[in-house]
Length: 356
Image (cartoon, rainbow, N blue to C red; front, side, top):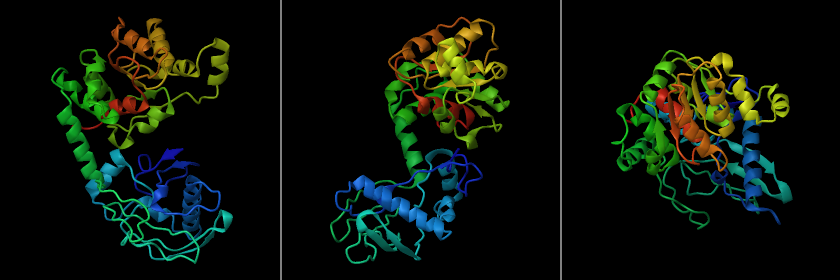
């Protein structure tokens, strides 16, 4: 499985059997058939549209993103913001084949983005299909649909978002080396109050940056953390490893009477020396890691502790902060945390410190 465009770039995906992409069904205005909910109609119309493009051999070009993007904007898309499949500034004027939908609904006409305020030509009685460009959208003359005034340029969104986070976040209580990580965590959660919940050991962020620069692997507790790490930022093409899906994990967890997340940490033993560990979901993974190291397992270069939840999350991070193992760490106290925050912390350590 791979995620477009973060793991593939703005290009046709490789040989992975599954590629995750973002879509936006509201690009297409549809009229539900009788007794059909709107979500079902949107899903059907979107699937038929992309299916027709695939049949005509015109789907792959969409993976290149908007051809009007500058090199700098493309870098931001791949490294941070992502893209919605099918959103381009190019007017795709080739007619779509007639698509038969449930309940006799049909969609035909042309996909257009140069005039998003004009509905597409359709057969009599068929739903209207309208293509919206990523910009300010005036209301269609028919009055159908909604229009919003919003910022849509990736580079501008990125810059403004970090500017707001920086302006609303007081970094004065943190050591300078932690500023970039703290700001990315705040940005990921859109919550400057998280700054007061950070816990850290002296020199922890520097230890993590140094380890990544030297090629250390990144060990994560769940796939969501792995997918949130931007590969383009990694300084040494560092491996990102999640052992939760190892075939041996379910049976071993049942035999030991513990969670799969805790058992998956056991498979890290040979990889732990000098590694960067990012735990964004499972308190049991963090607890078991501490138990392993106390029992003599190799020490990683840094532990990023961001498990989330009502049971064990606060306690596991408190245990990490109180460790007497000489283990460098950054953690978020309390119940809050999550995969996005753990991945944001890794991304901060992996890339240039432009957010300081």
